[in-house]
Amino acid sequence: MLGKEIKDPYNMESRRKAIAGLGMLPLMTVIFKNKVTHQVQAEDLLFGAGSVSGYEIHMGKTSLLEPLKPIFRIFSRSRQPVDVADGVASENGKVWGTYIHGLFENDCFRKKFLDSLRGKVSCGGKSPDTQKCFNSFLEEKEKEYDKLAALVRQNLDMRKIYSLL
Image (tube, rainbow, N blue to C red; front, side, top):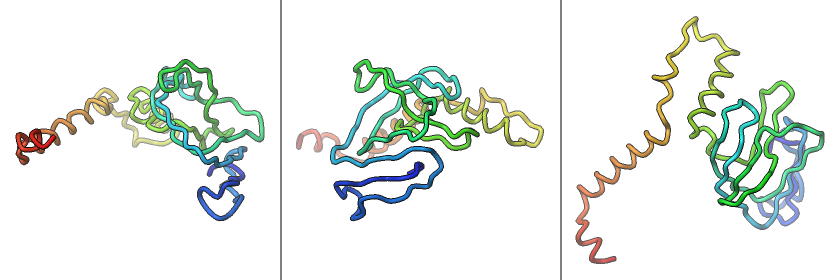
């Protein structure tokens, strides 16, 4: 979508065989029939946040129309070792794209991303206490799942459900 063109030779997404993209990055994407899904681990080459984890889910392949440096290096895909360059950024760094979803669930990556924005925008002279602001996303998510599980156990006849299983 961020590239110059999207080709859909099998009409997976529309009746058109090709459509112009937004033209924000020098790339072209071809949509295929098969969906790619992987849990991935990658090295962050954009902000230097170290290792990040996420997932890939897409139905195509993107090709660069100009040589650009990757912003991630995937080293594990579905628990198998790989060495795959992923993602690119525009020259000014304001636009970047990747096949890796869930990046902002990585605490260090999220902090480095926000710090990069904070350096470009005025925060009213205040520098937030990053230790207070950046609780672990995954810890907070687990707490919410625990609350939901307790609510379900409280309001359902679990013995009946287990007997049906």
